[in-house]
Length: 470
Image (cartoon, rainbow, N blue to C red):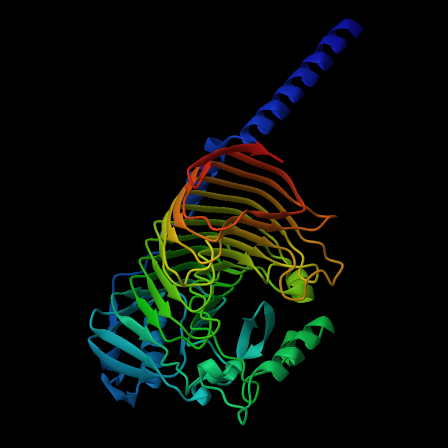
């Protein structure tokens, strides 16, 4: 009997070791990594709606670009929701409105040759709603298109959503003269610092009241705590701040959108603390990051403590922007499992291909970042920039961790650097692999500080082969 137990224990140890070996091999197998992306895409389900339409003009809207259609949008959305869902159809014309709040099972459909113009009067976006502003929860101006706690919501069609932000409306609140601000005008800095302080003091969100007098600009589209989201086909332009901002959402599809807006903090798409997101077939031409993955800022991000995870980005075009794909800087709730493939990035005004930015006040664990088949015409700075000394720098106790970044089959024609990796001595950027890449027109040597396990395999820089491991 003792002999049988001994054999049984050996078999258990053998198979346990085999499982560990298989897991280790799969964790270092690029095919296995990308298989996870394929499985993820199978999990993200298309959003569907009942086949019934509610024509906006049937609820009193006039498409003359002058008449206020806010109430018509409200009535049409409510009727659609009460009937079990469908499309609220905006026909050809120009429709002026304040904030649009969507309900469950409602698809806001912007027809071709239709433009939704958002009123430039900030009062049209009051009372304040529960939102997240630069990674911190608060009560602020309503996003231009907003939903909270809904399921099956969409904005689709071939029409245009125009926020009408410019150097006279919304943008001056940034407090920068290039966006129309002058020294006689108020701006966002005072309220921004107050909000950060309230977050650090754990003031309840309901008491963090911003809105009128705060000068904190609203996002364009924000679906907060929503499940089954679709944004497809539309063009979005002239945004007060970030353009598409899903927060705490799940099962999100962003497809075939054009995001063109060059104001301050005009990021294209910022999924924050979301899971199971696909961003595809879309065009980005932005005043800030094209795509920025986020998960809350500082103590507020750690309080909510929800990562951004399982994001697939493919077949997108990035023109102007601070970065093509960015993680941070509001990343305190962590980020993982980000897959980027088959994208084109090209502009003298695009600064980086991949950017990761955080510091020891924000912290965060950022891991499992995969990019392949990326064609870069030019970027102004580094193709890959990892910065743990962003903004406040190493001034806190929440040490960020950056690990496992795999970049393959990337070509570029012009950049200042290939790599600019800046970690901490106590937390090096680790497990970075580049293989089968061809970087041309590189002006400067790599900048590498506090990096562990950096591997280059079949990487050409200005025609010279680099196979090395640090």
